[in-house]
Image (cartoon, rainbow, N blue to C red; front, side):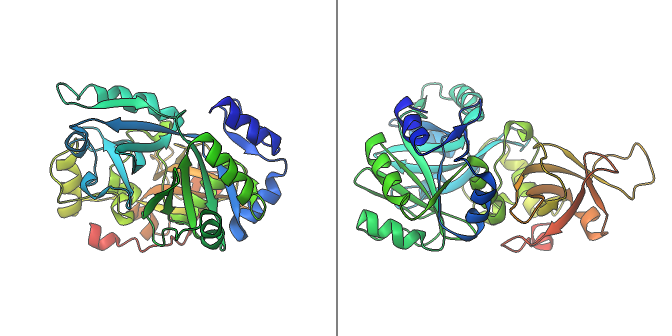
Length: 355
């Protein structure tokens, strides 16, 4: 995060964690309530950016990621993932394009590991990859009135459907999934500061966890370091949210991802869960309290979870489909741990169709 941007946020009352992310603007409980009901703005500096450009960049990225990079342009962004040869996601991310450069938006902690791995495969390709986290400020906007407010400030029509994007006077606007209309915004420091100030008149600034909560409610997972290499894309519903192409050609892990899709051997899916706890770490085991064997393994793994204004945690968890269908009583961490119950996702799981 640029010092100037941090100063802007501090002047608005931002409180920071040790890793530089915004914890809150002084009243976390109120911020959670507003997040699920009203209009909020959120600093997204806890996400980093990888920039990719050069004569061969499109072909290079096409051979690395799970989605079809051909569809990414100035009017369309996409979700995608980077897999190991065994088909496990190292990271997932949103890809946007502005000024001829592709940007990958992913958790800050995964920027360097992903950069290091991608650079191993450049070879003689005319491609430059770099950490661009300091080049663009980024913020989120969510709320029932978000499109109207953004359109009034920018003076142009804003994207209407998820994954649509546009750039106006240096600010890139990306529509993303959410319980309310939701946008990611990217741009240089000064225009973004002016935009933040104008949006702050009608919207409440909130901490990073509130943006995480909105992602959970949208059913859009974020693979954090604790879950890197834990899931094949379909286990985290990535193909259901438009993040996997099955016709684009080869990429690392493509054969395993395709086999799972077409041969019907998917045994785990991601579910929306409620946890009777105040906190829960990504990667935590989820167990069945009904298992008779003391050494029985976990039936799932927590992707991420955030405090909900109605109490407890709203989270996403990858669970064994058989355990869910059997109605197993789920617990977090241990068999007598906090209760884990299922909630509705905003999209159909289509378990049978996916295998």
